[in-house]
Amino acid sequence: MLIVAGKVRIKPESREEATKVALVMAKASQAETGCLDYRFYADLEDPNLFFVFEEWENEEALFRHFQSEHMKTFQKQLPGMVVSSKIQRYDVATVGSLR
Image (cartoon, rainbow, N blue to C red):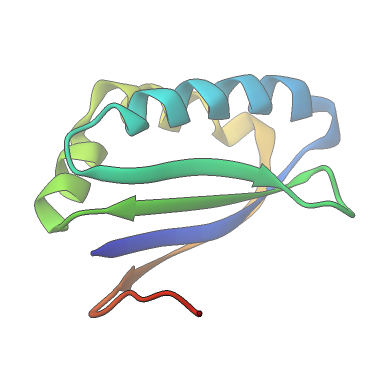
């Protein structure tokens, strides 16, 4: 399993539009083969700080995601709304419950 997670700081004046763009991206990504989860969250203290969390079955699914039309559209829309971002990929060997 692959996890993609990170932070995206949005310009305050772009928050509403960024939220709409993120929701479209999340819905399209969730429908992709190999996507286990794809979500954006807003920080409770800073509404202009978004978190992204993605779970992918494998490398091939993530590669297809990066080639998708909705990813291309997202990458064109987002730059004018973003102050900074840090997104990282994690290769997960095992997953288990904490209880």
